[in-house]
Amino acid sequence: MNISPLQAARYQYNPKLPGMLRHGISEICVRSGGATESVADQDKIKALFPNTYGKNEIVFEKGVNTSENKKLTVGVILSGGQAPGGHNVICGLYDALKATNPANVLYGFKGGPSGLLEDDYIIFGDEYINQYRNTGGFDIIGSGRTKLETEEQFAIVVENCRKHGVNALVIIGGDDSNTNAAVLAEYCAAHDTGIQVIGCPKTIDGDLKNEDIECSFGFDTATKTYSEIIGNIERDANSAKKYWHFVKVMGRSASHVALECALQTQPNICLIGEEVAAKKMSLAEIANYIADSVAARAAKGWNFGVAIIPEGIVEFVPEFSVLIAEINELLAGSKADAFNVLPTWEDKYAFIENGLTKQSMAVFALLPQNIQQQLFLERDPHGNVQVSLIESEKLFSALVAENLKARKAAGTYSGKFSPLHHFLGYEGRCAFPSNFDADYCYSLGYNAAMLIQYGFTGYLSKVSNLSKPAEEWVAGGMPITKMMNIERRHGHDKPVIRKALVELEGAPFKYFAEHRDQWAVETSFVYPGAIQYFGPSEVCDLTTRTLALEKA
Ligand code: FBP
Image (cartoon, rainbow, N blue to C red):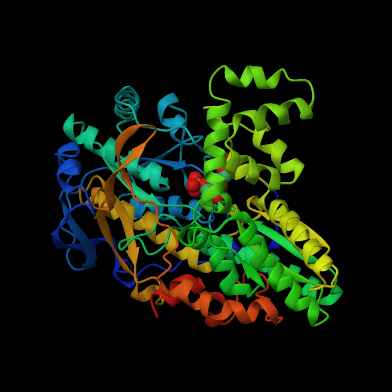
C-alpha cells in the first residue's frame, strides 16, 4: 500500500480512551443504571421487543471484571454512507477482543449488511488492521446500503454466524441500521441463538442524536473538513471581492451540518431547513432574505459573500413539498410513460401545466428551467422525485438573481451579482478522522467489545460527556429500544429510532440566530484552516461548536 507521510504519522497516534476503560480489561466492571423505557409508544415497542425491551442502562467503571471467561468470535459490518472514524471503531473492537483473550476472533463482513447475507468476509489480523489505524474511509471491509430487516434475512444471518461460531455482531451504522440491529437482536434472543447484537452510532449527518447519543461519529471530521473549505472560499471571496458563493453541504434532511459549518465559519447566510419549515417560508421569501444581504453588502461596495445551503432544504419549504407530492402523483405508475414519450420540453411543460394545481404550477413556474427539468429526470426506484439531487444552491442563486433584477428595476439596488456554486459532500466523508473522531470511534469499538464480553444484546455502544477531555468520557451501553418510537414509514407503522432535527430552541441554533444579522451585512468570516492532528490540545482536540454550545 502506498502511504502518505501524514498517514504514516497517524499510525503512531494512540487514540485516547475514556478514563474508566484505561485500566486493564480485568479491572473493568459494570454498574447498572435503572430500567429503561422507550421515548414514546412504550406499550407498542414493548410488545414488539418482548426479549430486549426495558433493560438497564449500564456504565463501566473500575472494579473486578466479573464477566464469564469464554472465547469470543465476533462479526462486524459497516453500514450506509462513509463517516470518518469507522476504521477506528473496528480497531478498538479488535484491540479489546485481543486484550481480553488473544484467541478471540474478529470477522469483518464485506460490503455492508450484504456481506452477512452472502457470507463474504475476512478474518482480521494485526498486519491487516494496522494499515487502517486512524485513517478515514470504510475501505477496510467496505460498506453498503442493503437493509437487514426481514425474518428471512435474519435466518440467513444466523445460519452464517453459526457456521463460523460467531457469537456476537457489531453493526456500525445510522438510525436505520441501528433500528435494524435492535430488531435483529430481538430475533436472535427470541430464537435462542445465543448471538448478541451491538450497535454503534455513525453518520456525518449528525441526525442520530438524542439524550443518550451526544453525537454520531464522523460529524466532527466532516464538518471540520467542510468548514476548512468554506473558510478558504470565504477568504477567496474576501480577496477577489467579486463573487457570491453558494455552497450546498451534505447532511440529508436535517441541517446539523450546515449549522455547524456556519458556527465555524460565520458566512453571510446559512439557511436552516427546520426554521424554514417552522416559519412556513416560501421560495420567494427565502430568496428575498438572501437578496437583502446581497443588497445591504452591495450598498457598502461589497459585491461578494458566502451562503451555505443545507442539502435537504427544499423538503422543508411547504409549497415545494406540495409540488413534489403532486409531481409524484402526476407520474405515478404508467402515467410516467405518457410523459416520457412526449418529444419536446414544450410538450412536457404543457402536460405538467395540465396536471398540477394552480398553486403548484405557480411554484413550478418560478424555478429555473434546468431545475424544472431535474424534477422530471431524476427518479428513485419507487418513481419519486429525488429531492436530494436537486441543485438547490443553483436554485436559490437563480431566484436571488431574479429578485435583484426587480430591485434594480425599482432603483433599490445597483450592485453586481456574480454567483458561483459548490457542493460539499463526498469531500468530507472519508477524511482522516480528527483526534476527536479517532478517539471517540476507538472508544466506541473498545466499549462494544466490553458490552459483548458482559453478555449484553440489543445495546448501543454509548460514550458520553464528549465535550470534556477523553479522560472524563463515560463509557457504557444503552438498550436501543430506549431510543425508539413508532413512525409511519412507506404506509406501515414501524418501530424506529427517532431522527434528530435541528432544535430551534437549542443553544447552537440560538447562538447562530443571535449573530446572523451581523454576519449577513458585515464580513465576519472565520477561517478555520485544516484539521490539526499535532500541536497544542486547544487546537487539536476541539469538539464541534454544536457540542460545545449544547454542553456549555
Ligand atoms: P448515512 O445516513 O448512511 O450516514 O449517509 C449520509 C450521507 O452522506 C448523506 O449526507 C447523503 O445524503 C447520503 O449519505 C448520500 O448517499 P450516497 O453515499 O448513497 O450517495
